[in-house]
Image (cartoon, rainbow, N blue to C red; front, side, top):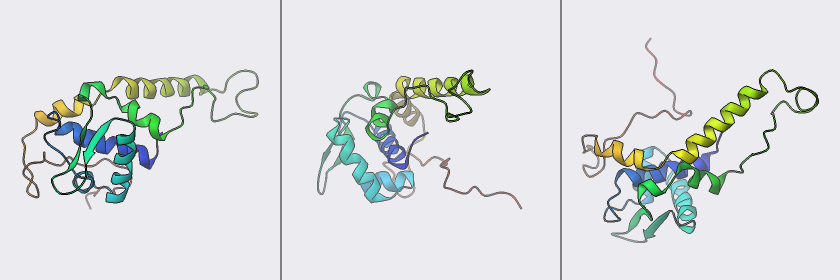
Length: 165
């Protein structure tokens, strides 16, 4: 549904939303990368794009870092998504050609449209405020950095889950 750059940008934005306090607390690309289990250069590249789009602000060097450029309730997931993804508003079925698109729609066409609409609604209707609020309700402090909220379990597809033997 979305690529690695979008995932990284959303991870950076949600990390900044969790610590949002009007720009007093700043996170470096390295801190965000460590917090979310991502590669530092990818996070830095995403932050540059997010900064150019006016979603984050940053100060380089020691004592610098990034923060949200607007209140968390003023930034949606779609704001990041649109920077990295091409939106398909055509309602075309992935089973085009001879299967769908000539005559009656394929058997799952309407379901696929509903999924596409649900994802669009989620991206457009979800602000970073939910991440800020959730972080405020967690007990602060991590062993590696007591100023950051505790890390969450990862649900990223490329992380293998341990199974009981």
